Length: 165
Image 1: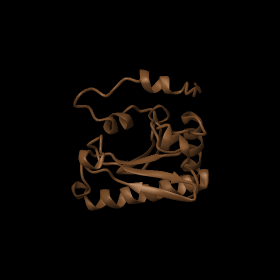
Image 2 (image 1 turned 180 degrees about the vertical axis):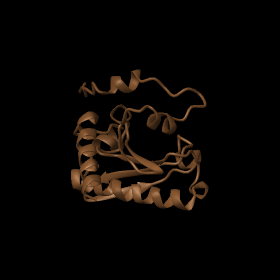
Image 3 (image 1 turned 30 degrees about the vertical axis):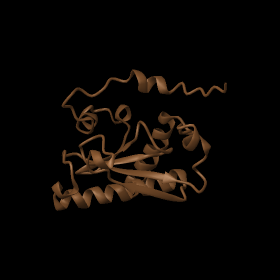
Image 4 (image 1 turned 135 degrees about the horizontal axis):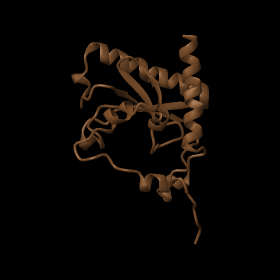
C-alpha cells in the first residue's frame, strides 16, 4: 500500500469548530489578528481571505463584512466594493502565482453546494493541466505550498499593491 503523508491535515482535524449559530466570516475579521485569520486585504465593505481548505493553491474568498445570504441583499455600495475586492484578489494572484485562468463563483444556498450562509465569492487560480489523477481517482488534492507560506506571499503582494495604488 502507498502512503501519502499530509501532516498539515492534523491542524484541520484539531481546529475548533464554529459554535452553533456562529458565523466564521463575522468572527475572523473581529479577531484583530489578520495573520491568524488569513485575511490578506480589507476594503471598506469586504475582505479577502485565504481559504483554509482550498480547492487549489492560492484559493481566495471575497467576503462582505455584513452578513447576507444572497447578492440581492447587498447594497449598491457593497456590490461595487465586493466586485472591486474580487478583481483585487485576481490581481494579487496573477502577480504572485501567474495562473493561466481563474474559476470565480458563488454557491448560493445548500442546493448549490453552499455550506456557509454568509455570502462569499471563490477566487480559484487555475493552471493548464492542474487536474491530475489525485483528485479524480484518489479524491485527494495536492497543494504544492504550505498555507502559512502562501499567506505570506499573497499578503506581501497585496500590501505592495495597496501602497502603490
